[in-house]
Length: 66
Image (cartoon, rainbow, N blue to C red; front, side):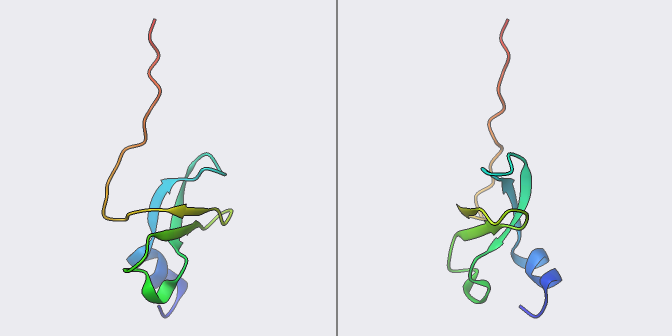
């Protein structure tokens, strides 16, 4: 990747960060081989996460039952 903007636009994914407890942008750990690996790190706190960027999911939301 040539610059940070390219890295974010082409390989960044948004997921729930286990350390920040909010949705954050994750970028591949190894930028040169991003398509081969599923290792990502949070752009805010640096937490590591295994992510399959092709698998779309919705985080489970707690349901309040009366």
